[in-house]
Image 1 (cartoon, one colour):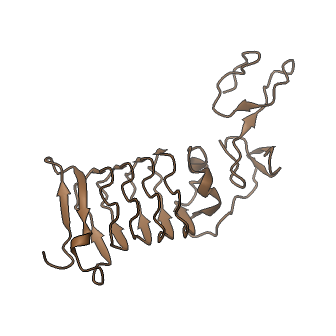
Image 2: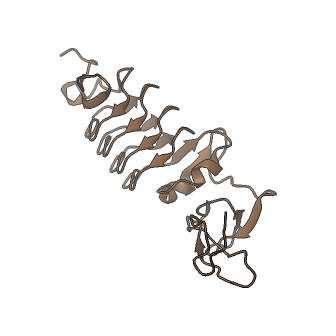
Image 3: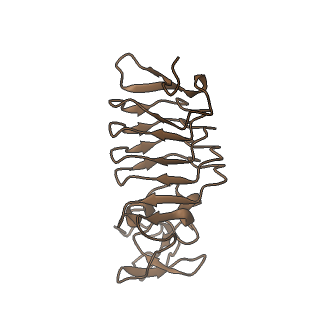
Length: 216
């Protein structure tokens, strides 16, 4: 096989990447591979153990599968706008990974996506999208690494939407947040019924479990 031409194994309809065989290429020459345009899903473990330090994902991709990049050698990755789901453990044990860019199109992220990424330094999100990502489960472990494009890490600024203090770190945060952007604490709310007094209602609840008062 020619150098810098890794073998891609695709599903019969060419919509799912099943395997990216970068190990067949001289590692000294292999710096980047580009997933074929038209692929919609990067399949389970499709790029695991990949020796390339950069993998380019086309705009056609909408889903990154289970353990898709596990133990790969990538140093950074840009997930394009259009990807809506990153499944469990997609980048687990990518010890060389330093930078990840997430798109605003993302609506679901699985457990332990960045688990054991010991050198991860930043998770970049689009400008003005921190509130969007604050509503997403399973990002708590890397929230302190999240920054908006063109800004520094941890730039959450108090503004007119702030309504409560985190019960753990006591910093003021917007009431709409599902977890604290400073310490990762899950946010709980108080029941608005003055006759109730319950103060530890999970953010996702629609009704007070104590008195039934509607919360949203």
